[in-house]
Length: 117
Image (spheres, rainbow, N blue to C red):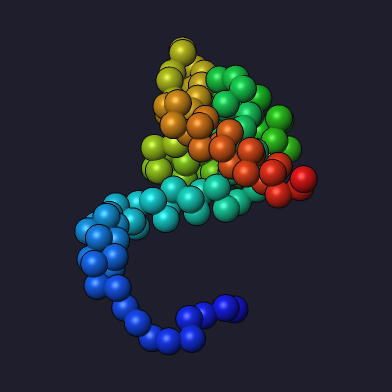
């Protein structure tokens, strides 16, 4: 890994960057958000819900999981505020919580597709 040949710290740059970095709590929450995208099953669920609002039974069929496994993943995604649900009688439908999630998914896809070129 290339490194500097001399140990010289630019204190102005260091201070500028230190003040730009978010606080520890915010960084922790961001790390948790990106962890959710670290599991292919959760990404598949997010992708499915970016396409269509789905109940657990339909979602589990789409992503090839048991309803119990899908529910477990949805609980994690809901705790991270990535998905939300609504009740309609006896049915519960899941969708993405907001447009930011779709943007993260789209930008992640764009990034990995650029790597293939």
